[in-house]
Image (cartoon, rainbow, N blue to C red; front, side, top):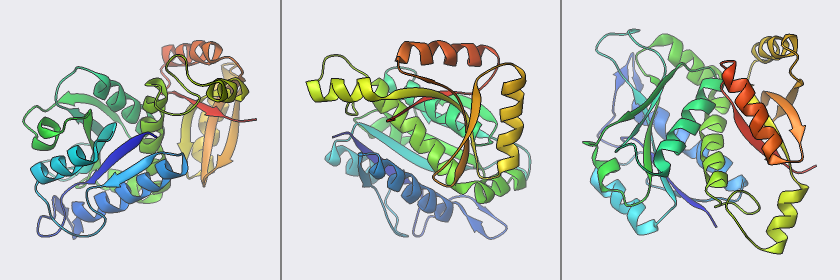
Length: 271
């Protein structure tokens, strides 16, 4: 079974960034727990570095992850800037640009862009202890700026969509790595191969809590003659394109959409 370690940044006596009474440690714990619940529903074993308001050093958190030995470590934070409302968006940090952690970071950023954030990209931070000391691929997600009002509104109004986006980015990477049953990799059991054949693939371009935002994207895609449709699932309005039995066809559709500037990822579902 795939296993993911989820770290809620800061905690206890270390509140992280603070803005107008809002504390980073509270947002990160709430988001970490929500992401973990989604992953567990999709068959992933989840280990948390904390589930309550306690503090461990970044080194201790990396040790927790190393003892668990998961496939990925995702550390969740909120960003902060020198001045209020100076910057906006999401960025994901990695130790360096090698291995599957880069794809994981890009998948998470892409999904968060669909949830409404500006995508500020993947950046190297070799000095961060939790990234340097973890033995598995690790990323640190900065889920918007805590001292930017627009990012806080998005965090609160589309919280479910943001949690789903991070989970979707993780799930997509696990599938690409062949670490989820019936997806990705090569070979596999007959049962897994049969499950994969039964699946169909769609390209998702957005997930919103507010229907009007989803419809705006839907109509734009339809005007460009893409076979887009709206799906309400898990409390979110999801804009998806196509329904393909063959993964290769979905990949070609995703490439076409990305060439038009859309942020995308492929979903797999049973009929």
